[in-house]
Length: 526
Image (cartoon, rainbow, N blue to C red; front, side, top):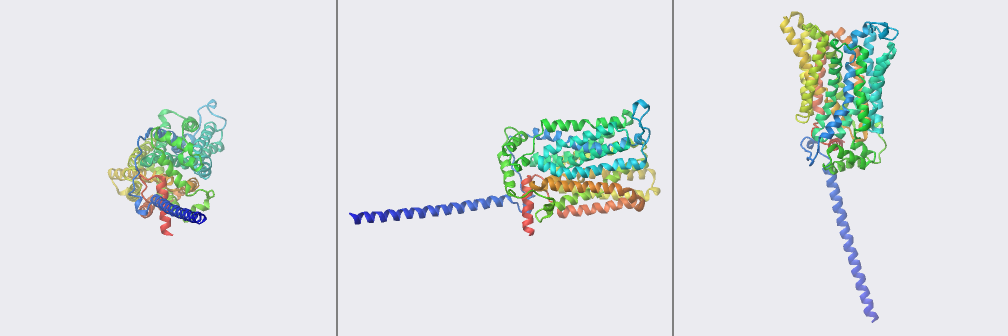
C-alpha cells in the first residue's frame, strides 16, 4: 500500500509541475502578445514624416459644432480689443495734437496738445506693454489655465482705457496706453492657444483664423467710431474701448469652458471630459479624443516643468525655428510700414480724405481675412503662406517701382499702379501671413511647453514689431521709399523659401498627431 501511495504522489507532483509549466508558457505568450500590441499602438501614434499630409481624422458621430463656435465668438473679444488698441491712435491723432477740449468745463486742467514726437511715442509704446504681457502670458496660461489667462487679459484693457478716458496729463495717457499693451500681449498669446485647444481638428484652421479676423474687425471698428461725422472725442473713443473687454471678462467668468488639454495636464480628467461634452455636444463621442489627449500627455508625465532653456533642446528646435521664423518674417514683411504709409499713397493717387483711405484699407483686411478663414482648412496652411508671401513680394516690387518712377507716370497710370499695388499688398497679407503664424504657434508646440514656447514667440513678434516701427522712418530717409519697399520684397522672397523648405502642412490633424509628427521627425534626424 505504501508503495502504491508513493507512486500516486509522484504522479500528482508530476501533473502539477506540468500544469505550472503550461501556465508559465501561457503567461509568456500573453506578455509577448501584450508587448507586441503596445508596440503596435505606440508606433501607430507616431506618424512618419510623409504621413502627416495624408492621414485623415475620423469624423465623430453626433458632434455639434455650435458650442465651440459660440465659445470662439466670445473668446475673440480679446483679439478685437487687440485690433482696436492698435488702431486707436490713427483717428485721434489730430485731436491729440490740437486742443483737447472746447471749453474749460469739458476737460481737466491742463491741455494735452502733443508734439509729433510725443504722439509717435504714444503710438509705439503699446509694443513695450505687449512685450511685458507676452512674457507674463506664458506663466499665466500654463499655471492657471488658458481661459483664466484670457479672462485676466480684460483687466489691463479696462484699466488702460479708463485711465486714458480721464487722463489729465500726457504721462497718465502713456500709462494707460502701456496697460492696454499688456492686455494685447496676453491676448495675442492666450487666444490662439485657447482656440486651438478647444477646436475640432477639421475646423481648427478656420477657427484659428478667427483670431486675425477679430483683430481686423477691431481696427475697422475704431476707424468707424473715430470718423469726424460721428463727433466722438478721443476720450469718448476710449470709453467705447471699455465695452469688448467687459464682455470678455463676464464671458470668461460665467461661460467659457477651460480647454480639455490643460485640464488633462492638470490631472483633472473628469472636468476635461465635461468640457469636451460642452464643446462637442451632449451626444458626441468624446472618449476617443480624451484618450488621445491622455496618451500624448502620458509620454511627458513625470517630467519637470518646462523652462525656457528646454525650448531649445533637440526635441523642440524644429518647432521653435518654424514659429519664431514665421513671426519674425511676418513683421519684417513691412506690413506695418505699408499700412502706416497707405494714407500718403492714396492721397498721391487722388484720395484726399485720410479717414476714408484708412477705412478702405481696414475694410479690405476684414474681407480678405474672411476669405482666409474659409480657405484655411481647404487649401491648407502651406499653400496660403506661399501664395501670401509671393503676392506680397510682387506688390512690394510694384510699390518700389511706383516710388521710383511716379514723376514720369501719367495720372491714370500712377493711380492704377499705386492703388493696385497697395491693395494687392493688403489682400495678400490678409490671405495668409497675417493669420497663419499665430495658427502655427498654437498648433505645433507640444502641450507641456505650449505656454512657455508661445510666450517666447509672442515676445519676439512684438519686439520685431517695435523695431520695424522705430526704424521705418530712418529706412525711408536713408534708402528712399523705393529702396525700402524693394528691401521688403527681397525679405518676402526669403519668406517663400522658408515656408517651402521648413513649414509642414497641418490642416485636418489633431494637435496630438502634429506633436507625434515632430517627435518622430526629431528621432529620424538624431
